[in-house]
Image (cartoon, rainbow, N blue to C red; front, side):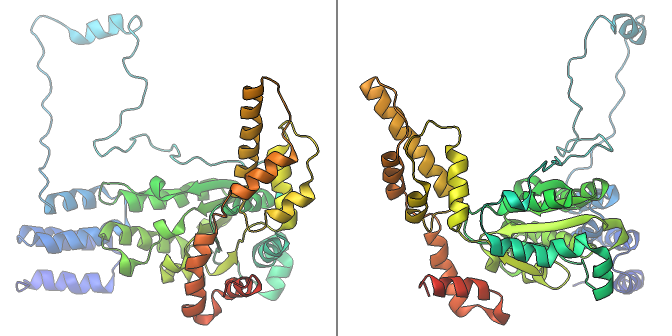
Length: 411
């Protein structure tokens, strides 16, 4: 590293003492850039963007440090002598419709409109935990860890129960984690904001972090609001395994947003997350005060399977269907598997009706045949989870999973 000038040394000391001071850090980055030390300037600008994702000066300095050409100021169009273009535009303005109805976007692909929410905030409507069939243990855990303290503020104050932190739902795919999150929002009477990795990641430097910040800003404006982080292992992957600095910055931004869950600005913002592979989530996200409570969501139990089957058969022409028998032979199937069973049974009856020319109802024979053909989609997940439960259960983090695997004799 080249020797620092006295001014750069002084600025480094000042930045170390006040790491969140963006103007000070950008001043240091500017001096480094003028000293032909572009790599160091990029590093300082990147840290500034973590603290202020939308800062135009930081973005411009980052672009210059990385060698991007500085756009020249546009030259005003020359007017033809003898013709008043402005007057002509005013005369035909009412007769000629605009060519484009969309709002122009900036060169980096972002909408220039201010004040409009870029995120779809949903109303969960009348969905409640009572609409989740079976899964009583999951409901009890949700009530004890999340809902009961919220519904009883006086008791919460008496017992000193903190609302800091969020909930992480984990388990095999297709078992209803997203539906449970919507049900929690319904219980709270809150808006529902679902976020996935595709909503956040952006090719432009600093935009991913800004998107993550705007997710939480939208939730604060819409409070009470449940922020649901779907596929958390993609949004919050372990930074030690992430080679791309952009993904590490997204995790850092998410940590910053989660650390403000109990501040006055975040009053009424509740964070739920879901993942199939919690062991791939950055450990810092699961520390106390963040997503520190975990709930295992397993394949549906008997009552839940009956409710799911009844739901998917409710509008189909069926006859003599014994749900009790069907529930017994579908043990271990996920909610998605059960939906596929009903779809496959309907397909069998439809094709048979086409071949014979006589429309017939969906019967028990169709459903049993479809159920026997479906391979439980959760089995590969349990094969991976077994290794984690046996060799990586530090601090009892996956005790619920160990108990289930022992009960099913999979461990």
